[in-house]
Each structure stands twice: as structure tokens, then as C-alpha cells.
Image (cartoon, rainbow, N blue to C red; front, side, top):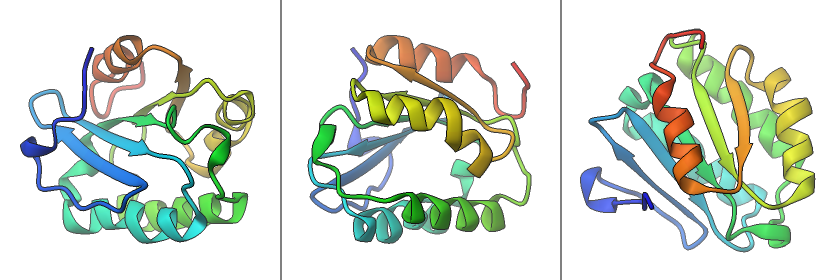
Length: 146
């Protein structure tokens, strides 16, 4: 089972937001843990690409299994992150894949119906299994329209 290997990439973290990359497969792993707030999302998620701009070429696995129903983030925070990502990415790698690990029905509905509108061109898919999520994200080469 793939785990986040924080030694591969200098990480910045809060107690609720961790990230790391697999540079060989060009994968960014973001882990959201119990109680993620708008503050956490708005402070730490944009920091990833500000400090490490090469992640624009990486596909992502976002693990919200540990956040469950305890997350305290809002639609407004997601909209702000989408706006900042769009300004940063400038349509580079428009077919980026984002695998979301969750068992939360509400998050699945957001991913399936809404995130595609916020993050235009990116492909989102929900998974319950880390291996399947990582495999799907890694199979989508950066810049491809799979």
C-alpha cells in the first residue's frame, strides 16, 4: 500500500495537512486529517505550489479518509483555492488527474458534481482504496487527456 514518504520531498505541514511527492511518478500526495478548516486549506494548500512550482506537472492523490465528517471546511475555501490554482497553473497541464480517497458520501458528491467546475479540465475520481487511487493517478501522464 503506497504511503506518503515525507523524506522524498521537503514537506511543510500543519497537524491537519501533510504533503509529499513521488518525483519518479510525478505524483503529489496530500493528506487531510481530522478537523481540517478553511484556515488550513487556504494557508497550506497554496503553499505547496508556491514553494514547489514543479507540482503543476504532477497528478495528485488527495487522502481525506482521516478527515471523515470532522472537516470544517467550506465551499468558499474550495473556490478560493481553485482561483489561486488557476492563476498559478495558467492552463499548464490542463488534464491533470486528481484521485480522492474518501468514504464520505458528501465528498464523493462534491467531487463528482462540482470540483470539475472549479478546476476546469482536471479529472477527478473518488476511491476507497489507496492502491487503486495511486494507480489511476499515475496512469494519467501529465498533459494527457486520458
